[in-house]
Amino acid sequence: MPRATKIVATLGPASNTPEVLERMIRAGVDVVRLNFSHGKAQDHIDRAAMVREVAQKVGKEVAIMADLQGPKIRVGKFEGDRTVLEVGQKFILDAGYDALGTNERVGLDYKELPRDVKPGDSLLLNDGLLTLTVDSVQGEEVHTTVVDGGVLSNNKGINKAGGGLTAPALTAKDMEDIKTAMSFQCEYLAISFPKSATDMEMARQLANVAGEPWRHKPQLIAKIERTEAIPALEQILKASDSIMVARGDLAIEVGNAAVPALQKRMIRMAREMDKTVITATQMMESMISNPVPTRAEVSDVANAVLDGTDAVMLSAETAAGKYPVDTVRIMATICVEAEAAEEISLDASFANKKFGRIDQSIAMGALFTAHHLGCKAILALTESGSTALWMSRQKIHVPIFGMTSQVRTQRRMALYRNVTPLLMPNFADRDQALANAEAQLVGLGVLKPGDTYAITCGEPMGYPGGTNMLKVCRVG
Figure 1 (tube, rainbow, N blue to C red):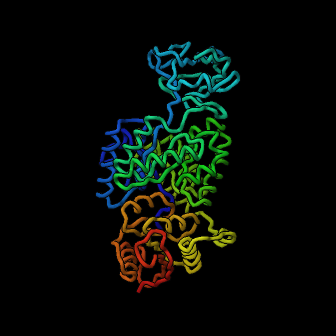
Figure 2 (cartoon, one colour):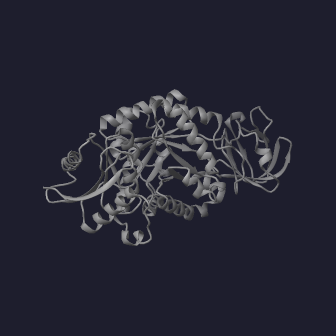
Figure 3 (cartoon, rainbow, N blue to C red):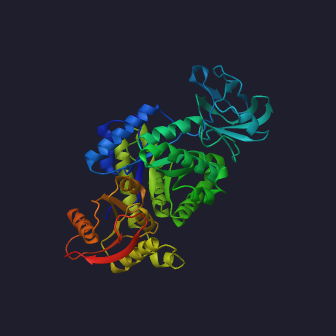
């Protein structure tokens, strides 16, 4: 069986060559992430072109995710690039200070901080490694006391425990970056720090306008990393195509202990609402410098798989780590092992399902039939990818093959759990299409004579949302 859980890998200095990228894709990468927090527009355009070329060479279409930077809630720069803060010392975060920082004060990229905090608030810097308590706000100065000290270097991030920073999700830079991402037609656009459905609706409008010259509309990923996003999760999901459980900033705002339960809840909710979900941040962190992961990291990846995530994501591990290819390979192995241990309870999950659409009913019928007949595969002939998406929302140990004549749809399906996307010719005749689909799977060695499989398609052929037929076949 193909691996069901997909792997997202970030490009960076460690993986920014065709040779390394090719090895990573062969090791199991399904989606390539371009991090817009680093690099210029042309850098991303060049990397996207490289991804397309290498994927074509490997013979595996991968999706491209453009991950927007979002608001820069960071301190400024220091004399000597860093300072050391001692427990109990006073330290000033100064929105009006433009010189290099000292051991007494530092400037801010985020000028609104003095208006977002009050005495008693806790500020967490450098991914939560340093903690400051706000003593007072005096004009543009936030006076604090160091609670947890350590090294503070240039441009480290600031979070407020419990949330409450007013920075908008989309900055002027993000709006320009959306235009860049649409110029190479990324399949997925990730929005950083959304607080509401409105943030996602604005991003979609901007992306659709920017993509109009290419008639391209990307899938939108909401990165859940703010406290305010949690109560608005259902509305954000409705306005998005996918969510990312962005555990780094989220953990800093809500506390580390709250994240595992939130992860499970988000994955479950996304699947119930027919959305995809990515689990991210520090999944294989130790492999930035070590050739093997820790046991805890192996368990973390496996648990995300067992929770039902569509994809697990690598950030610095592949962008800047010593072992980008090995990290992907080991992560793929962990996913396969975890999937083998999954319990399938398809009947129970169908008990309360109601379907208002013919194509969705056909998709669910294919799953039920394939599960009980012991089919070797499910073939979903699809223009938009919707049928394959609906099938992928249920856990089933029958591989699903999304077969489409649209390259964009093929790439988009690269993120769907348990879906292998394949390109096929565009047939007007149904019988020709069915025969070609079977021949492809036989040629790939998935099916052999005597095997049964389920296949769905629409009649007449070639219309998105037109799936209205389910057929069970046996290879002759």
